[in-house]
Length: 195
Image (cartoon, rainbow, N blue to C red; front, side):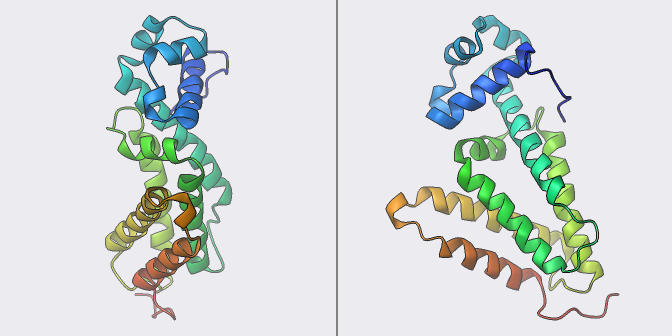
């Protein structure tokens, strides 16, 4: 994952400029010329620090994961009273992030795996921890790996569907129905005796 950088560091200025351009104008707005101008730097700085535009987008994805993980860790309860409710809250948080920051979420989920791998793995570890707590409490209806895949797929699918639906036809109930369908698919109504 990224080390903490000074807000004045060239790398940080470039990443912040790229994120702002991405969120305000979509991926087409993130040209090396536009990013370097917004960061107050020359275009060669991007190539020197990131290698190419893909390297810059990986850094943007890593930055997004770092912000997301900070929020996710702040919410994390290592011993929740209700692990099924914790699952709902975690899923809602992922979907809310994707709905509110669609361009960044898309870049994070298309990342090819240079710098964002560690941050992505850290997020998956949090999800796997939630799934393990469900399993330990006898709540899982399916095996842990399948549960994690269902949880992740429904979250990504919810965000993708939300943004591919015209704004005037979006129904917030969709997100609730998808979440509850996911909960029903991976958890039992009552816990089984833990193994």
